[in-house]
Structures are given as C-alpha cells and as structure tokens.
Image (cartoon, rainbow, N blue to C red; front, side):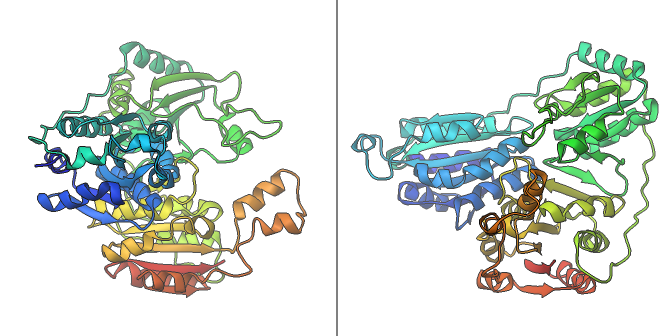
Length: 514
C-alpha cells in the first residue's frame, strides 16, 4: 500500500462517497489509487470551479463531505471563488491538493506556489503532510474537520512523494466534534426579549432553515406572534406547502432597512447580524435600524435547531402547530416571458421534492412568491456572491440526491463562468433542468449603474454590461457539451418544455429569451 491508497481507503472508511476531480501530474498516484478500492466515485469536472461548486451543492444536500481533487496552487486558485461561496454556506468539503515532491519544492519549478496562503482565506482547516506514513491519519482529521456541523472547508496539501511512498495502513474514522450547546442564559434572554417586545422578528439562517428548525419556529410564532424573516441568501431553505411562511430579507439596503424598521426587537438564530452587500453612500453597513433591540439566540456554528427547541420550551409554545399543507400552484402563465411569468411557470410545473438552485439574479425574485405554497421543495441560493455557483451547485445537488429533480434557475452572465458543468451533467446522466434567463446583459450591473445615478451610461459603460455583439448561442453551447436544449420565447412554450424536461431522465437546458 502506498500513501495515496491509504488516503482513499481512509476516506471510504469515513463515509466519503464522491470526489469531484480535475487532477494533474502531481495527483497521478491518487488517480491510480481510486482503482485500489471500491466505494469512492470519481466525477470529472472540466474546470476546477465546477469541482468546488459541485462539492458545495453535494455537501448542502448530503450533509456530509465530498472531496475535490485539484492540481497544485493554480488549479486550486481556479476553484477559489466557489470555495468562497461554500465557506459562506458552511458546506462540508475536503480539498485534496497535490503538490510537488518534498525534495522538489525548493527548485521553484514553474507551477510552484504558496498553496497554504491561497487556501487559508477559504478554508476553516488547512494542513500539509510531510510523509506517506502520516497521510492516512491526517486525512481522517481533514474529514472530521469538514464534517463538524454545520460544516466547513478543509484543505489537505499532499506532496507527490507522500502519495507514492509506502504506507502501512488506513486510518480509522474520527467522529466530528459535537456542536456547542447554546447557554441557558442566551435562551432566557431571547425569551425575555420576545415577551417584552411589542413587535418582534425572529431572524433565521443556517440550519434554522431546515425542516425541523422551521417547524419549531412556527411553534414560537404560534405562542408569541413574532414575525419570521430569513437571511437574504440562504444556503438551504425548505419551502412550499407544509412549511411556515417567512419573508426573505431584501438585497438592496434601503428595502432591507424598511422591512426591519417596524420591529422593536429582533432575535437572531443561525445567522449573523445582517449587513448591506455593498457600501452605498448615505446607507449604513448594518441593516438593523438604531434603537432596535437585538438578542442573539444562536450563532451560525451553534446547535441552532436545539436552541430553537429550547426557546420554544422556555416560552411554553405548543408542542405542534398546523401549517398550511394544501398545495397551491399558480396557473400556467401565458404571454410574454419576463421575471413574473418565468417564476410562475417554474412554480406551476415543479415536482414535489424538487431542488431549486437560484442564480437567476434579477429574474429570480418573483419565483419565491409564486412558489410559497408549491409542492414541498428545497431552495438553494448564491451564498457568497461570487457568480458562477449555480450550475456547479446544481450538479453536486443532483449527485447527492439522484431521486430528486434539480432545477437550475440560471442567469446568462453567471452561467458563462462555469458552463463546463453541463458536460459533467451529461456524462453523469444527472437529472438537472437548467432554465437559462437570456436577457443578453449583466442586468444587475445595469441596475447598480442606475442606482449610482448613471441613468444614461455611455458607450464604454454600456459595453461592459452587455452580453450581445455577438449574441451567445446557448442552445448550441449546451448541445456541444452533450445536453439537449431548446429556446423558448413565450410563457406557454416555457411551461410546455418544463413539463417535458421534468418528466425525462437526464439533463436539459431551456433558454428563455427575455
């Protein structure tokens, strides 16, 4: 057994089932070692950002780590943007990065770089091994670190000689550390704030937005009358019939402040205090208005569902409450394609148990209202703001949940960052329907220009927000990557193609001309 084989067998013993890989020369022993044991599925991504984004989507849905296999510092750097998103999502990921042999690093070969410095900003745990003998134990530590709830990115740097040198054994799995319990004092303070407040909001994020957390929040609402709000870009939100109604905090700061202004008390569970996405003149960074009392029930890294359960008990909330369970789909939309009809079409056609990855940007907002009482589904969003997350994240979600349909609600500009995801979807026969919003522009940048006072941008500014001249041939791109595709120009055509795609195994792309 060599070091690479000890790593693979350690990973399998720890329950790791998938490795999203874009390897190079320094990872060849690991590539060969994949054939030494059954149980770890390698999935090739044609760009490292596809691998890291797919590991994010997999981790969100499987709630356990996937691995990535990346080539040296430059390969890892290609995947950093989606690791930034994964860090914000608290997704469990183990990055394996091959490095030059320990005795070759000092030669400063062309691909030599400071991998640790690259990895630290997007990783909660980073190690570099120095011998094949230590590789198995360090791998077990990496998997346990990534799997510590709610999850984090763990990065393991492996010189090539540590992969090919002899090793004696695999390591036993390490049980991830338990989440810290929220103090009884924090629970009592939150309960006291709710009792004293005249108009109270319960601001939820992270694992509070899973089914158990939301049902407990509904019990708290039934007892206290507080209002439920969730963070702007949740990593995973369970929605639809049977889930309590909640508002999503708006993206633009003036709208967020306006939503929060009526409350005198805000209790936070599983989220950070909300801040503006960007700094704007005349708007504060902090979105909770001055004078509003804030009680922190549970931090993102706490056992948030248990904290909500304890708060419900402290308030003497009912043991259970009925939430509206009747499915109410919107009518099939007709006429022109726009944000409203696109959102209505998806909500009208989506099957029960669907997973919707929303990177639709300006087109996506009406979907949330349209799907509030749709069949139960899971909603994923762009957690860290680094675009190009949608298609890879949908890919990983489909690997994690092969029996559920994934809908990638996708903006055109963002899709070009990681379009290679379609090839992986085709190769793995993944059940992903991509609904691509083609408005031939970075529309959000046009909105931001207008917000900054530039209502009539000049030729150069217009050129930097337009995706025309030439127009991107999306159906040709998709077919070239192995995914069946069609272009639609009316709401009727969209619903028809959605119905067909959602009933057909494998990936598909529907291009909407907006």
